[in-house]
Figure: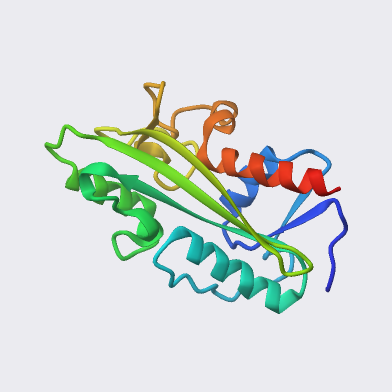
Length: 198
């Protein structure tokens, strides 16, 4: 497979939750194609010190393998009272890729701390056919809840309360999250960019 039709976007991820969320965000005329669709099961390295470095590393890995335009993402939760942790290490903050454990670790570290300010940040890295690389950023400010609540979303959603709301992303509906999430904001910029090139 060395090409994709214009109505498809290759998302360099193994995460089905991300694919599902992005599929709801993009135009119905676009179809998100994941690594699972290409039967690619290898782990993609994430050894960068920033979200930008990790996103680039993932996109480059898949671009070199399939020789087709693709985009990747890296996201992180940055907590003010924890000096920006978990940040770039969000996915395996506790040493494991288990968000229930990671969420619990955050809550334990913030026990007794009144400053709960935090923000989610997503970086998309797009590599086009001519190897041009472009980044798209999405940020949503908010705070960390006192406890984990809600089953919607994934990752740190059950402990993050977006600014202007009293419920966590884990409690908010998909439509509300679609309107204000960090990934939605980065996706909007990506889609606008691609649309302007059509």
